[in-house]
Length: 422
Image (cartoon, rainbow, N blue to C red; front, side, top):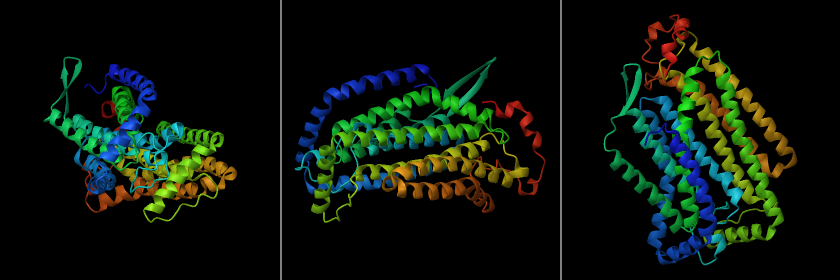
């Protein structure tokens, strides 16, 4: 598949639109098949194995992120893939609040599970996460082996990727194993898992078809730190994520306010599950534990996205060696301050929400403030400096700059358009 094909992006939009309609028709049927599968595979060995797969899949995602960044030379491509993976992984939180659909053990008391989660079920976050990371690994390899050649005045791209079909099959098997484990555990129905898979694939078709190339061109074009367009770009993306999440949160609360019986049905199932597994019951005094749990997901989501946005903008400057070594410390501090100023705007918005709903947003606000400061400081200042001081430069970070030449004047580097062309 040509990653820059607009046809694939259009196809992704059409396929997902069609599946939304199909999902409405088959969701209940898939739920009944889920019950049959769970009861058929109720052997403790299957359940414990599925729980182990679920637990290890979280670690697997972290390993994948590290592998992607350290193993491939085309850092900007990889960072953008990682960023989009995290964006998609975070979307499950507000999609769940839009659908307001319970998990199988919330809907059927005969379903036993080891994982008593006080969160809604549709779509499966694990399905979105593992599928997106498998696709990211595949296309990081794809970009790494993409070779550009000039034919007269045209630029032709050829991919010299080894064993593409074998890799695609292997990554698909890994993703399917993780997805199936969620069904066996009784925490997701087949419909919730399939929705997550289809959603992720269609979104990647759109991203790889159009968005990736646009973002890469934009960053390379405005890579000068004197340009404020990258900061504005970061701010706009972050504000979009925040708006979507808060809108979904308010929508979900409104739906449960209209139908409180459904909310307490879900929570009673969660409390019973925790009691059966010898766990302490959740304190649901204010009646919004499902939203509070999702808000925590938003918190982690924003921390990761915020850090990665800064990471892409800052580390992306190293992609083609465009780095002003003369003012490297000042550059990092400047970027850090600019990012933190924008985050202050986000905190003020959240504090405004906290004023109206202190129990809903208090812990979330504290987590997001502390998290952004720590991650922002680490990503934009401490991590790059530590790598350089210890002599562990990652390819692209300093572009093999000699320490004796750190004070060399590179102010004219931006005069050469060829350095910032794609």
